Length: 227
Image (tube, rainbow, N blue to C red; front, side, top):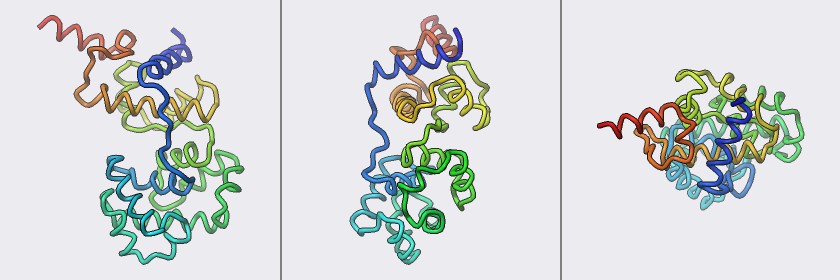
């Protein structure tokens, strides 16, 4: 099966099982951007609490975060962990938004994807995944987000090596699928959902919607049934 067809089959089966995921769960682009920073090494439940704290403090704007004293910002994002580091990262991101587009995120979104990506990666605390979260979910650019879940699932299916690097895994999707932001959005969200529900560190392979096209899953089920 061609890689394009294989990926499309995975998408179709996950969508049939879980339905549309309606990501990113945020009200505004700046909330998506802030969430993308806070979700680094954090569960989404804890990120939601930190976002709620910022919302209650009327601090979910670029200017509010820039103007807020660092200790106060750190206390608000405390639930997401690494709160001092994340407060610094949020300050850096919001200063970038001021310098780059005068906080006009709609205007920023019209810039070319790769130009924006290069600029975002220059910001303190923003790596590949966070930059791509911002590009896809906040700005609507067609770029595929790679995370731990994506790497684990694709390795188990048998299409990449375990330690595949970010650009190579991202290219696997972007070179073989339509360049469509909504499609990339839904596919990544479905991978996350499947990884949380079934394809965990200790996976539940029985009943998996992609079991028959997963090398790890088929061998795991065969071993279990023979014991």
